[in-house]
Every structure is written in structure tokens, then in C-alpha cells.
Length: 403
Image 1 (cartoon, rainbow, N blue to C red):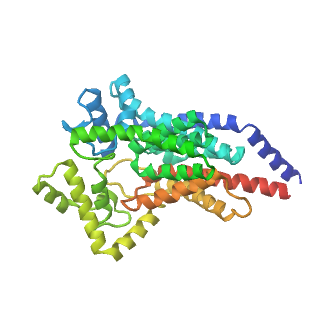
Image 2: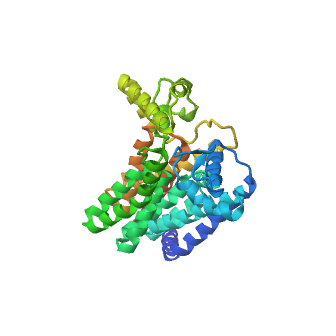
Image 3: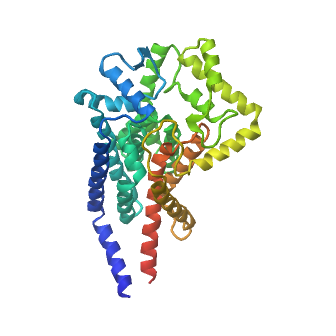
């Protein structure tokens, strides 16, 4: 009985000091990720890091959003625009650019707490602590990748929308527009959020949310129409990404390592511009899918399964996160999140949990349309952690009260 009382008191203390625990977790995230950024220094390890840095440099030097002197929309612009102020202030120091990810991770930890506390204060505190020291998040935050900034935008978009006041809805819409320009595959998540607002009859909030969310992507569409003379919603890399994931040589885990040189050569022969190449690759992928529906379906299911892998082979050689560490940290979290679903009758799901679940399911299915990478899953891992923290908090409270 003494042990039961001690556990009950510990849980009560966690819930009473959940906000302080979350703030400590924010500090821990900064220490861990900034420390790792110091270890990495100014070396750019991966191709994508070079690309995002070059796009940011081009804007900083007054050449606009261009690559190799040519106007482009190949990469979504959200992340380079986020890096731009830091680039200007630091003179392009790579370490300073890494700190953008560090700040976004710290913000993500706090917003994970805010969302989690809607379930229970203990769930919010636990989610914040796990996010702060989750190796894949720390690793990705210090790389010049857009996934951790996208995570912050996704969590902020959700938290602000759930507050259902006009000012917060405007902020949610701005986060949504920025998210779409950073990682476009999360655009349908805005629809899921709107559905949840609709269930509470918040029709005015939905209209305001969509109106504000459309501003930044709309301006980018106008820019693309003027510069590229074509309708390009966000970027022109959808075609190549679709082809990389849907061709005779593609496998569930091949990603960017698959050989598409034959299509690349043909596109050069046709002398297509950037928009034309995007359409050419997309048509080639669709042609293969329609000609081989059975193989395409099996490949799609394999990509869905591979989304939950703990590692994948990298096309660019470099320092990767430990496979063993990734497995030991990811699969227990995934198992606890699955347990939360099994406990739904005993502990009905809060709307935050339902939102997290729908975000995860929708984006896993969308990622598999193209190709999957572990780092693409990073924002979904954070949502999985929220579900896992909820499972622990509910079981802890339930068992304590039962005893």
C-alpha cells in the first residue's frame, strides 16, 4: 500500500508541476541539440543541406530564389525563407543556421506539452521530456532539413486552432500556410483540422482558417506564374519524387538511390524546362502505375510498412544516427502508442489524440505515394510520442486509483 501511495503522490506532483517540467524539457532540448550542433561545426554533410544553403545564399545576395543563376521552384521555399534572416545576421555561418533547428525543436517541445496537457498534465509533461531527448529529433534538428521546423508549425497550427478565438485562428492559419510552403505533403492535415473544428460547429473559424492559410501559398503561386510562366502550387519536384517511388527498379526502401537516369536522359533530349521536366517525370510514373497495377499496389504497401522502419540507407555518405539507438527509442514509443489505441474503451480518446492519430495515418498514406525516408517521418514521431505519453499517464493513474 505504501508503494501505491508513493506512486500516486509522484503522479500528483508531476501533474502539479507539469509546466515547470516542460520548461526544464525545453532547456534540455536546447542543451542536447545545441551541444550536438557544436560537435558538427560548420561541415555540410548531405546534398540537401548544400541545396538549402545555396537557395538561402542566392536570396541573401539579391539573386532571388534561384539555383545556379536560374529561377527555380524545385524545392519548397518555406525552409530557405526561414533560414534567410539568420543567414543575413550571421554572414552565412553554418553553425548559426543549425541553431534554427535547435530553436524549432525547443518550440516543438513546448507545444507538445501544451497539446498533451489537454489530455492530462502528466501526458503533456511526459511528452515534452521524451521529445527533448529523442535522438532522431535531436539529430534532425541539427541538420539543415525542414522536418523539425515543419513539426513546430504543425503543433502550433493545431494548438492555436483548438483555442477557437479569432486571433488564435489567424495565427493557426499563418502556421498552416508556412507549413504548406515548408513540407507540402502536410497540406491535407489542414483539412483534418478543419473537420475537427466543423464537428464543434466552428464554421466561422474554418472559413477564417482557410482564408489566412491560403495567403502565403497564394503569393508563392503568383510568383511562380510570373517567373516560371506556369501554375506551380508549391514546388516542381513532385514529378521526380513520384517517379523515384514508382518505377520498375523501385523498392519499398530504395528512396533516392533508385536509377532513373534513362528518364533523365530523355528529358534532356527533349530540352524540357523545369516545369516540363516535372510533368514528364509525373507522366512516366503514372504510366508505369497504370501499366502495372499489381506491382504498384504491392510496392505501395511495402512503402507504407517501410515508413515505420528505424533506419534506411542514405544516398549521401555521412555520419548517420545509430541504428541500434534508433530502434531502441522508436519501437517502444510506437508500442505504447499502439497500446493507447487498445485502451480506447477503458480510456476514451481526447480530441487531441484523435487529431494526432488522423495526422499520422493520413501522412503515412501520403508519404507512401512517393517514397519514404525516416527523416520524413520525424513530425509523425512527435505525434506518436504524444499518444505514447497519454498511454503511460492513463495507465499510471488508472492502476493507482484501482489499487
